[in-house]
Image (cartoon, rainbow, N blue to C red; front, side, top):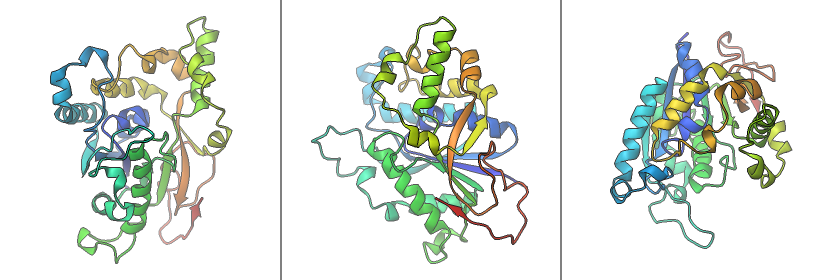
Length: 295
């Protein structure tokens, strides 16, 4: 069986900061992995102090496309753009730009993703939960568009010109960046007698016991954390190589939290939770054996 995994992300760099070790883990198994990137990250900021120049600011859209291409090469994935425009991160009293991705009707904006789903026919799709993982308007919209596209891709009456309907067997929310993980890594650094990089951050981050309780799937991908880091560093304008993303040595990460974590939200194949494989139930699914799971 040819296995196919589709990640849907809001911006270039999200595929490398969220679930990239999972991606590399499955690519190493021969799984085809495709990333659908909703926007070009045009309204992002340069987050690497060494690259904050007027020239880079002016060329940011082109730089982000080049960075995405390099990250895709490192991860060994296919990548497509859905063609929407970054909404930016508006201030509390600021309106979204007229052309912002987050202003669109999700059921309409789902069209290009429906086309991708029907062409690629993934057995597994990952996206963000209803909070977006954090409250960026494009991340919240990415969730809405992803779920609308999953529904529409299965509906023969929706955009029939984009191919035969496809029911995605398993849909997940990427939940890797949760407080429990950072608290465990911070504690591991303390036990190793090293500076705690997340101590102050954690004091400002309320306990997310509900988020932890939602985790269903723990992918054992520690051997691919180094690939994840290289992919993330390819987004040079978006990450400070001296920042806290890289403050914890890989060996401590591997021991302190060796998985990337997900919540299964839909399945048409039989599953037993918790699980450690996004394709659990898909690899040995029996044709015509009806089963349904949804939160």
